[in-house]
Amino acid sequence: MNCKQFNSIPLEEVLLSLGHLPTKQNEKEAWYLSPFANESQASFKLDKRLNAWYLHSEGIGGNNTDFIKKYLNASVSEVLEWAEKQSFSSFQNQNISYQKFENLPKTYEIIEIRNVQHPALLQYLNERKVENQTQFLKEIHYRMNDKNYFGIGFKNDSSGYEIRNKYSKICLGKKDISTIKNGSDSLRIFEGFFDFLSFKNVESFLEKRPTDYIIMNSVAMISSIKSTLENYKNIELYFDNDDAGNRTVEMIRNENKNAEDCRILYSDFKDLNDWMIHKSPSNERQVRYRRRRVKYTQVKYGG
Image 1 (spheres, rainbow, N blue to C red):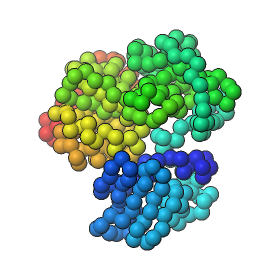
Image 2 (image 1 turned 90 degrees about the vertical axis):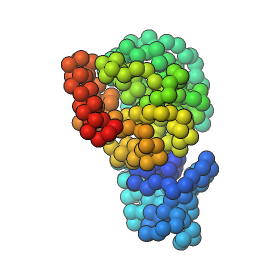
Image 3 (image 1 turned 45 degrees about the vertical axis):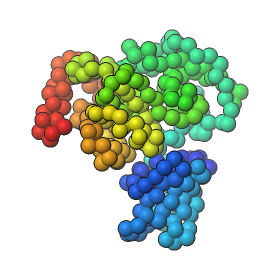
Image 4 (image 1 turned 180 degrees about the vertical axis):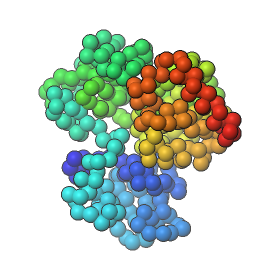
């Protein structure tokens, strides 16, 4: 990762990974308590359009690299070493034939969109234990850097596609959430689409009916769903078991008392799909045991 690549990551996601949440925000900007000092009045401004910050209390600002340099008291090389170790969901990379394209080029061409049928992609879905959920997916053939590629495509609300295969994790088009509506007053929120597909495999075993669904495609998209959550009586959260997931769940629950953290279902695993892969929860006995744990927790803690 170089400075240009690191600075392309939304600073909002960088701040979230460090445990800093905005005190107020809108589509254009967000305000935080200073990450560098104790204060009661937010003086740290994030300009979302410029992906830049300005600390009014000290009269300084800059980009992601400038922020982490000050935050860690580190050199540029140390900043990049730190950034390389993080799991920023918006840092999209392409690794085909062991060659990385860590930033999408400005232009690309979608050659074909069709139902999933390529043997390599079907095998990949089989490895992720969601091969029976292809009704939510497309096979996307696209061209960039004068080369042709293909992958699993999951459409978002801006008509972009999250693209995945064994070697790639990118977004073609504008980054956005994916919404699936069934006219329900209940909502389930997933961090990634493989978690959503995994849940659909066990939904009936968990004795749950279909609801509306939001797939974030990045925890950095959290600000784009806040107003939507007000429309639902019940909200279930299925985020990753990591710091970013913890903070996102906390953020949603602080503002929505009807939101329930459902990660006990896969508490010993990185995420829902990881549980699906390693524990084969399509085994009805195992799912029933997990279902009892979820119900016990809901009764015990008033969920």
